[in-house]
Length: 273
Image (cartoon, rainbow, N blue to C red; front, side):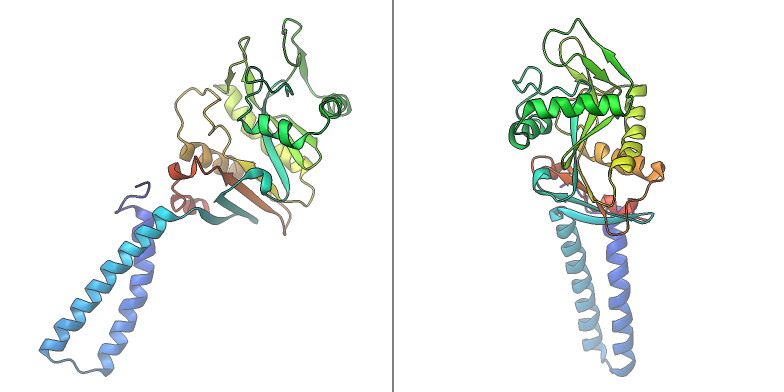
């Protein structure tokens, strides 16, 4: 079970409903006269109902696949689903070269990056030109890696976002000479700091959708973060960023069905204001 029987969130939810039941029982006890036999039956019924209530809450907590939060004035939805089926601007985590070569060597076909290029891009040249034009237009800081034989040679700072139609391409991981993706040390914090600043610049009044960054197992970190920890890092970084989405806009974090069993959705309620 991803939610334990005596977890704080379970006890809190139970206490809130139980107090209501006790209030009803107290009112009934004022107007109904109990003899010794019926009094014990009533107490037994109350205990049984309370136990059943606790187990129902526990069961619902473990089956939960969606939670709604509010941080400052921004509505946040965390749910199991498919990122590409969501409405709004979709954040696509890429490597720091914004590679477009999907061959399981440069870009993995099963990654979000790979699926985006394969299923959502009809003209690779158009995408590459968009990346180049944005680089020039915004005077982005880049490094040219002339030794790189395959893939793009222009390297971007992690946290950089390139908008493309309904997508926000995010330079999330750093590629080494063997095309292994990692995000470690100072780059980790810089990525999340830049992420929200970039989103704030490009979001307009639209909703934002993003995956649980790093949960696919492709990116190497300083330590073995769980999907729960990676998701909570997104929420913490959003909280300290200070940005708010437009009043009618929503930040949706989409959890892939393969990752969903690892997520304690009820625990995430603690992030709500």
